[in-house]
Image 1: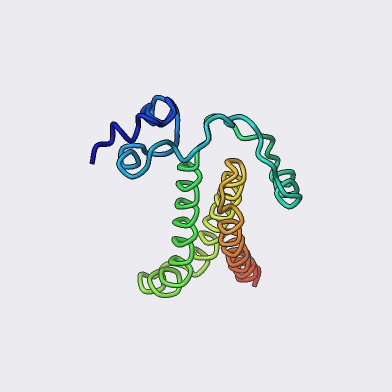
Image 2: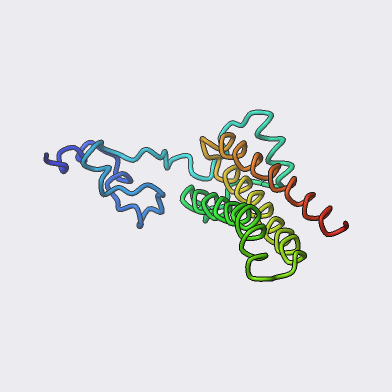
Length: 168
């Protein structure tokens, strides 16, 4: 298939490489499938219309407007990191602390202390992930926020359990 004829009718910005234009979309495979860029670059820097709920969340998270250097790829990366930290916390809580630490003779108080530290880090990462998705006005920001919010609730329960365990 000749992609040069397909790009002939495309706007000039669509023919430019992704790295040169700062576009977050990889255009190497996209050129063979469809002409043009799926991102409307004419509206870069212009705030999209937002619902009242979006405005409330952006106010709570203290987000002004989308910074020029933040991309959707960074939002995905932040989400992956926060989920990895949360998964590590759960693995430690349910596998390492109750089975491995007692087997090697470590004190019972080590688990809750480590759980508190890792849990607080995981919750912080989840909040930054939600913030990043709203910052870039990602189309799935509410879905990712629901997932991250659920993880935050579960981690909060684990934090309370760790605190109770330390106090008793």
